[in-house]
Length: 385
Ligand SMILES: [Zn+2]
Image (cartoon, rainbow, N blue to C red; front, side):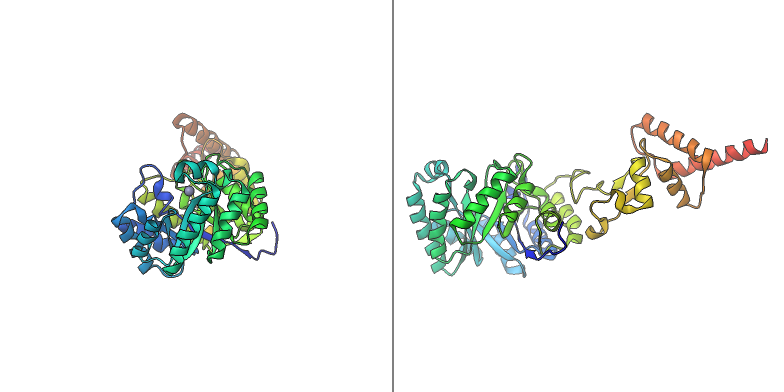
């Protein structure tokens, strides 16, 4: 971790486009607007609001978001065709991401074209969008399986027409952080367009790859809330926002205290539950049971604190269970004015562990205090005899 963090990275959210592509996820218009509002409040730089080619309802939704949202750029995702650009114009956006296949395989299968033909088509379609007054980012689909010379050719054509960015999409989530770093480093030499990295999580490496891309000089991260997206999903916005200053000497404009609320809203709209141990936004990530960890935290919080929960607007929570130790038992009782020591505390702990093992669950604080009162009374009784 460096003390001097000044490198500002753009956070471009595509929850409403790639996120909604996750199987079975459908957002209603009010849900889309609520998510867009919350994304704006959280401080994202860009909201990719949808793919207008999907039809009238999508065009209306993108239009409603573009009309209402102030702050972040609202963009529409287009294929490499004039009709997609026309649909984006109908939605009323000023920015589009025009996606073109970068790998020879995708060029051949999707467009029956070679790199020269894709570059010519990009020139035609981007030129058309520019004539219509749109700001254009070139999206490089399947960039991780592309020849960098092909990317340079097509990105060069886009650059000449005034495109403002190139999106390097690891569409199939094939990369690891080392390969990502090398690709982006070389790409920076091949084009002077600002680079955005769009990572997929098929190998569980989307966050790591995004951070590696930023280390190598990418200036924007394409992310989704909770990593919601096609197949195994995308790089989670919340992980990137928190990890940037810690691992990549960079920062974003994200208000970290809004992440939990944002994640809750998206999970609800996606009809999904957030795993309790999900990094950054999981319910249990600041909840401690283990006796060793609780004793450390209670004497000096830095002992077992990697992320200060206060930076996320959250706090540590101690729970009592099979792995609890005396420090936690005493703290829970002490908080209710029940000071227990020595044999009483040890007896309470033994009973807590027995209950936790029998029920395979945590032991509520009220139950722990009840045990403390019982053991104190028993102790007093013995002392009198
Ligand atoms: Zn994607």
